[in-house]
Image (cartoon, rainbow, N blue to C red; front, side, top):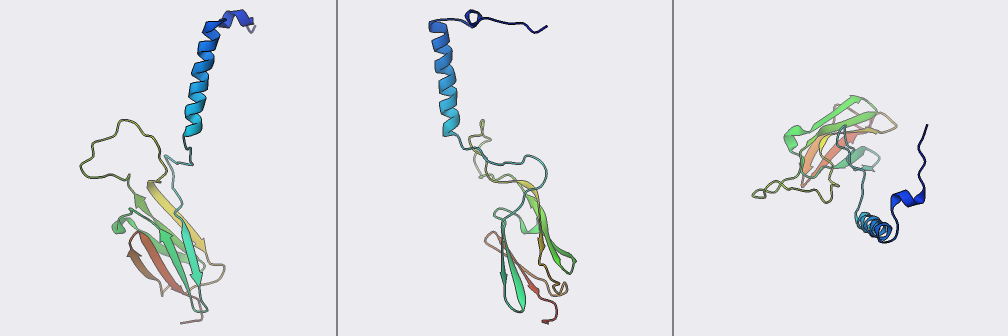
Length: 145
């Protein structure tokens, strides 16, 4: 059977005011914090721009901090482009390991992005460049080679 308490069992007077101040301080601190959609496991989704002309698609994938050797670019079929790889936790040389984490917005770990072009592309004409944290993939539209 659940126990019931009356208000007096939780304290009174100055004790309640002290708890109210502590709770208010916690709430004030929480309002100052920024909370974001961080994923500690699984894959994250890099941001993409897609440009098109009559002949080609140009895909730009934002991958700051990703080592080129970890990147994989594949066309599993004529309509799709898969970009995947791994980004480690950002670290600055000479800085000791931190004791507390104040804000964590930069995704790390494995990533994967599948792009559906809605039409066939020439999977034999894929050109890839990686400059200043951006992966550029150029694909010919089918029939335009």
